[in-house]
Amino acid sequence: MDLQLILALAAGIATIVVIVLATRLDAFIALLLAAVVTGIVAGQDLLSIIDSITTGFGDTLASIGIVIGLGVGIGKILEVSGAADSLARAFLRAFGKGREPWAMGTVGSLVSIPVFCDSGYVIMNPLARSIARVKKGGYVTLALALGCGMTLTHHMVPPTPGPLAATGILGADIGSVILAGIVFTVILLPVVVVYARWIGPKLEPVLNSKVRHDVYSEVSAASAEGTDEGSSRVSTLTGDHEHSGDSSTDSATSQDAAGSAPGTGKKPGAFLGFLPLIVPLLLIVANTVGTAIDKSAQGELAGDAYEPSAWVAPLAFFGNPVVALIIGLILAVYTLLPRVTPRNQVQSWLADGAASAGLILLITGAGGSFGLVLRESGVGDALAEAIASISLPALLVPFLIASFVRLAQGSGTVAMITAASVTAPLIAPLGLDPLVAVMACTAGSMVFSYFNDSYFWVVTRFAGLDGINAIKGWSGITTAVWICSLPLLFVLDLIV
Image (tube, rainbow, N blue to C red; front, side):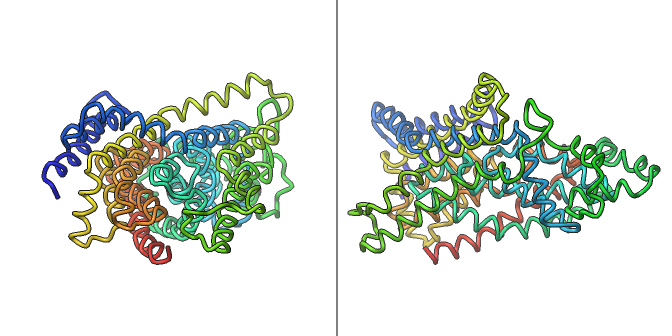
């Protein structure tokens, strides 16, 4: 590989890491400056660098920007309506007593598809505390299972912004990414639960005093009043209905969870809460499956000369991510919020959701800029040739880049976007399937969450873990799913 192009790539990635870690600037500026530095060091014409940056930014957001905005809007409505909490409680009842870690991991993985990890964890953590309080133990296990369940889908299942951005940059089919992400999540969830159950009891005795008091402070009072009420509260949370007739119990436990629908004393039911999530996903998947069947019937699996049949056209329309998520957002607003909710209040919530997505949109677009500079400067082709010469499995390229960037600067979303941007020029030369590349980016970005990751602090502070215990608990569980995702990538590569 040409030494100048090696230096260009190294300088670009180093620019991202240094700016994010050592300056007051954020990842958006870091990716743009990395594109400029890479182009200059590679010898690209200065004006063509600017053209690549603007073209790459626009092309990337054209395919993915609307979807990110709609996805965060759905998440915001789930949050403010209390539907997320209703979903969590329904899963607890479904799993039953004694399987609370499985329920919390599943709840986390579901809620984190439309809701950002940080806010989703804050919404759901009171439920974990309530269960631990009435069981008089096991809080760390529940907290870790909830947090890492959220990590799985936050990193792997669109319309979460990170995998959505990687999908757009690498040109993968979004329905295929959703299916693969769900399969990976289902297979990795037992890893989450097993690790949480193994490390949780070891860390429970070292909970910091404030969290221990907050979680277990009501235990003595509950014991003094008798065990019947405590049993009823456990039954209410886990689905054992022996004492479910105690309405005071429902009231007590509901104080620990997310609020009810604004303007009423009630939360939407789990079925209604599930609709804005499952309908868009089913539409997108139906489009993917229908198109694949139609391509096979026409003998156009490569898709170069493919023209959709009449029966596929409606699926392609309603299964387009933009249309599917518009439907999901309309369902969320009109089924989860009461009619008395003022129009300006709903618009304010949607504006809050859009504001939270603003930086993600900018980072995603800047990632597209960086990727186009890598392609047009020749760095991508040179890197592909170098990798081919050392016989490194192609899927390890995005996986390792995402892992290194995550370790260096902490953000899983930035790691995914950076890895996708570097990998995009390598797709064709290495014969790497875009779906495998996307999943490699998302899996690699889960490695060893620690001090430079904001979500690390959210989970460990709520879980009451400090210092080395936080590393053992949270950094350990994220690394466990990272390691276990690697064999899944090789299997996916063989299948695809």
